[in-house]
Length: 257
Ligand code: MN
Image (tube, rainbow, N blue to C red; front, side, top):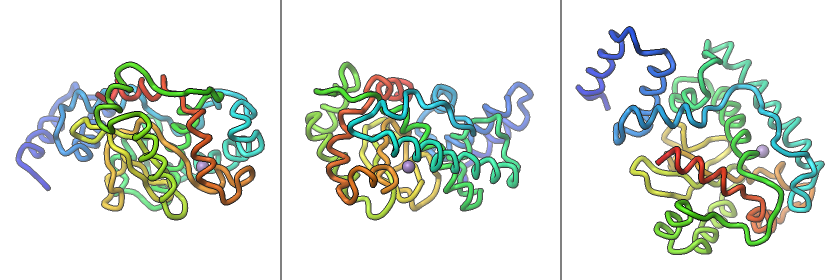
């Protein structure tokens, strides 16, 4: 909905010689997404703290590092074929649709309704996988968050076990291909949700029911687990909890607060 405050902010930004292109697009993107419920400074901080480029970052560990939960062949195909294709196709779409690839991908996600389905599928595909790799580390037992993130999870979901159950349910019940998410909504509350295909909570489209700043994601496309688990998505989800890099998730949580 157009409001006079949006219009006056836009007018101000237009005339502000000091405002950088990044700041402009970051503010407008996130004010759309967050519907003005937080300050522009906070929204822009989210963009710059965890900005994602258009190329793949190196995988933060070897292909075999997540064994035995995720096998090396799955990781190699997933990173070097599936995810690489999303990045390649995203860059093609960005050239065709004149997107500034020096800016962050978060800005494109928050205004994705302006772009093609190719941008949506491959931009989401690239963003989600870049985040997914960083949300994992070699397996550890009794793996759980601590500090402020654990406190926030316990406050919102009652206990860490309750949270795991609800998140696992979201991942299990996502029909077909998609993702499960822990995210903060525009009011700053922790929420669990899921998206279809390569959509994510940053996207400003009605079919994304769960909108906000993503903290943790789980890929439940069959390509993520089929070689080892075949149809056993539930077993993949149960084992995956041992891989979660909670210190990375907490960094996102603190940046997004
Ligand atoms: Mn995937």
